[in-house]
Image (cartoon, rainbow, N blue to C red; front, side):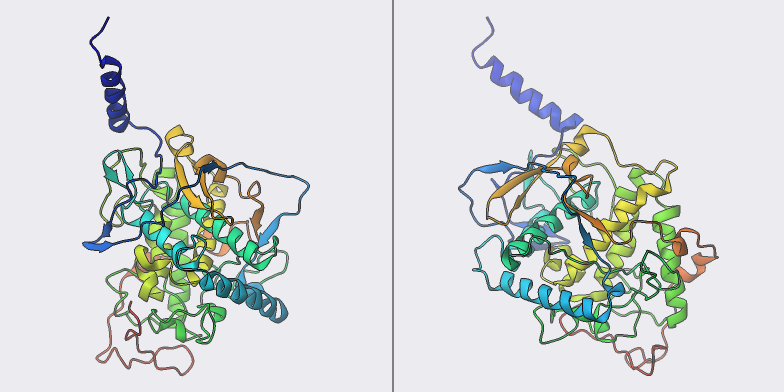
Length: 414
């Protein structure tokens, strides 16, 4: 017979080897700790939970109607009004929930913060779902449960969060409804100061309706944006989309980001991130600014969810390019587990593998075909990605968007 405790030692060694050589990430709320990002500490742990943890059950009904997440720029006036009224009501109800209710808007933002700051621990390491192959599936789950909570509060199981179509320049006539409007502008529904969808902690850029977003914006530029003429900026945006979705996307490692397994160490921000995460996605966060500028506070801005709806759609489009574009089949990816609160306040354990088919989750997107404008884009676009020199007075420099004077001084940050 072996020495007493021999089995325990073997199990301990096995667990340590799993950390060294890889195993699926398993999230637990136990041991949640104060997190940090870029030297700033954050206290984002969720409220204490005493109930059972439920395993997610995929209940796909092929005969049930599938919800369509639509592009906000392609709604007609009546559709936009109807959707805006319902979304405002849903977010208002979510914000009115008690502060410790895990379905509340504040608690949803805190959960995103905890997953972004190393608050949850695997092995002895805090982990961050950003800058890794979990960026896309985790955010798909996050929007899924956020949407289910809104459906419950509204008493409408058909309600769907529409997406900010910021990759669409409006030049290509796409989709069955022949939408030719551009989505490269801040959605007006989120800009009304009297609406629960408005967020004061933004830069001033979203207040200029004729100012296009800058999909190539860098973090260094975002505090004082270089002057770029509107036409050049719109063309540059198409070039950026071609870069991140076509040129820098032909393997899952390049597009999704580094692999992250149980016990994996955190990396510095943007190290190991996938092409869309670090360019395009991050640029929108920087362009809107304020709370949206950094992951720990990004969930406080309601436009976060419309923005990430488009990220989710683009992930779904990515494999259409073929030539090696395929999601990982590694069990350490597919069997990774995360915890979320559902619409009944229960904690639900989900796996990445159950998020791979949005139709099975009950929704599809309005535009699930390739955007030929940026897919087939050809230009010497590299020169367009360089910062443009500022004029002598950047705070009063005239933007070529109508007759507006654009000052990028901060209101609430960014």
